[in-house]
Amino acid sequence: MARAGTGRGTGGAADPPSAAGPTPKLTAAQRTHLPALLAKGAASYDFVGDGWTTKRVAVVIKRVFRVRSHPAHLSRWLRQEGVSVQQPILRAPLTSGPSRGDQRGDTGWPPVHP
Image (cartoon, rainbow, N blue to C red; front, top):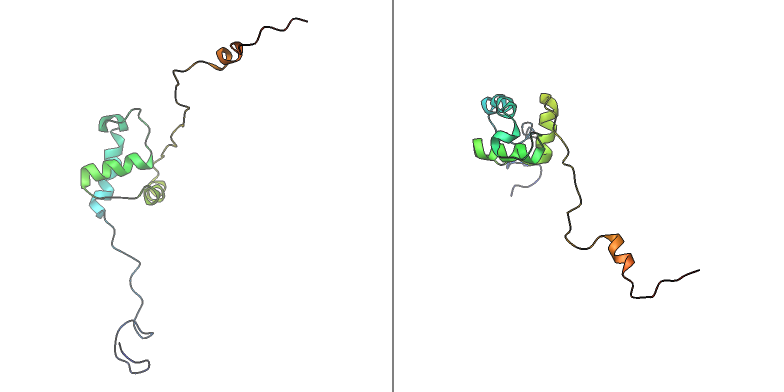
């Protein structure tokens, strides 16, 4: 480590700041090719339904380009490119148990008559 004020060492105030951040994992050519891949539809990549989510786009990028991408970062980039991504619909799981009406009718008590 260099002493302060000696002008030796790195990381001091005299060093210029680094560039705009880390280098992107996808090249410019890959980014320009991605909208054409998404135009094929999600069903062509073995997804159920034709809607795109950021997680699905991340899977396609991983399969095609062998590059991992975080869905949150993809969301920003896809909005800039004009690609609309969908929010998945969360549905209650189907149960095979008795319905609520069946549970109320079988209390084990005799019926009450007015």
